[in-house]
Length: 188
Image (cartoon, rainbow, N blue to C red):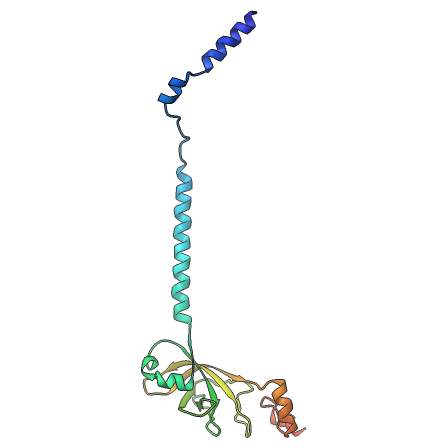
């Protein structure tokens, strides 16, 4: 054997650890990084903050959706509360009144099939074009706001449903005009 072979054997023998020594000494794990743990904790805190912000902001901004009869049946639950309510019903014919100073609209709503009447006050000057008291035409109204302890509804937003094009075709056959067409356009 050459000197090179002997040197290789000695080097290999020095590197080889006997099996008895390997079982007695535990292998050392690489040290854990503290940065990963801090990053995980930071992400969890941010996720918790975002979820709680979303939960609390949505619960306050959500509105209950009721029809007139349901709202008046549960009047004690909603009267005087800070919760916003969305109520839907038909405009009672002949009740729409507009005042310029202070600018407001007052009207009454009721369920489509009759029932309890809800007085509504809308303290703004601008209403949708389709919100008109038209003879021979039922106007579906959705109002969002709060029910006062006095029993009337303080609306902050008003929506009026325009009849569909199919309903309007049937109404036009009977000689009626669309509720959002101005009086000048109807005269032409």
